[in-house]
Length: 230
Image (cartoon, rainbow, N blue to C red; front, top):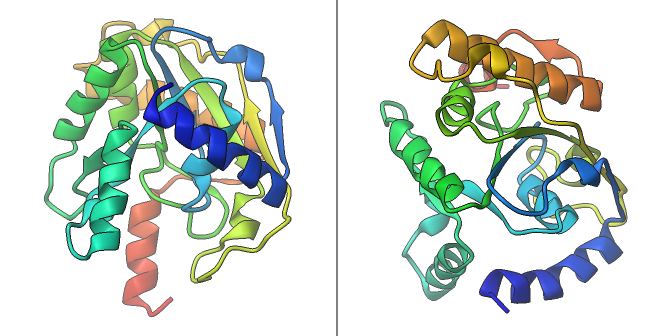
């Protein structure tokens, strides 16, 4: 059994005991082959719930800060992330996301499931924000199916600013059918096509989540809140 499988054998039952998870539409996720799982993003714990809900391993991009090489605990945690195939990305201003997308493409070329949060960061208020077009570049460049996923209730477990998570809150993971991106096939090099394809994926996520949508990037709204002391 892989390290990922061993970790899931331990983590999944504990997670389900603490936070009952209802999975809907799991039949839409292919059991084998490359696939992109595109989800809304409400909590730092979202990758955990998707990983537990899925029947196959899922690779996510993790912010580079989680791979810190400071004390023993940080080094052990960083080593565990790498062991289960998680990728790091530098999210500081001015850093290119292309390297992250190229690494993600290699995950898909290996026949794996890749999880991504197209909003780029957690929603600051529970609404669904504008998707970043790196998702469409990856989907159109690879040609693999994109499964929309909606997480329900994870924001009540660990809302922004809360240190410890709240236990025994129910979570739903809703999966939809693959998003039809055929209108923009092989047009990953066109900015307008990437935008349209991303919007189609976000619309599919919204249909599952029922969230109010915002025609702004979550990162820009967070920056505004920071400037105004929010």
